[in-house]
Length: 231
Image (cartoon, rainbow, N blue to C red; front, side, top):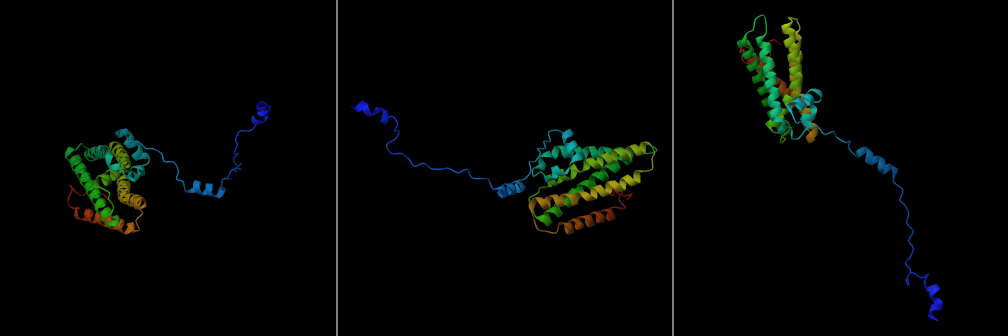
């Protein structure tokens, strides 16, 4: 008799059938997804500076990526090599003329080196006072020297003009001076946007420009310090 109901019992899976829950697929909110796409930052490129050649490449094409890097101080060695390259160019510019004067080249290189170090110190302390950030002098050193690759290019052109006796050196000196003078402004803007401080950085930058002008005025009679004597 029990086999009589086996074909019916085979259809019963569970004695306590569970309630059937209807699932609805939630439609994506177009407005929310659009907002997420707007807020989501774009993917950043990964810039790797693994050699002096790559350092020169990035400082010539986009030096701001070095200044925007929080750990740019790790490129101190490459920046130091860039400074030595710049000093070597200054040496040959000062020594080249109607006759090769090694003493004039050494004097021109030392004056350029001193002015660069003074610019780094001025920029660091003005940056420290204005924004009160934790930026080290190593970072300021690297960030300033990352813009000097363009100055080195101008130096190569000026050296070529001197060798060819072309009358364009004074214009290149003025252009180089304007580029060097714009470096603190670029760094202040980069540091300000990075730290989101509500300060008037342009007044501090104006103070730095005044300090540079004072430096040029006090050193105008000292040939070993007055780097921009021809300006």
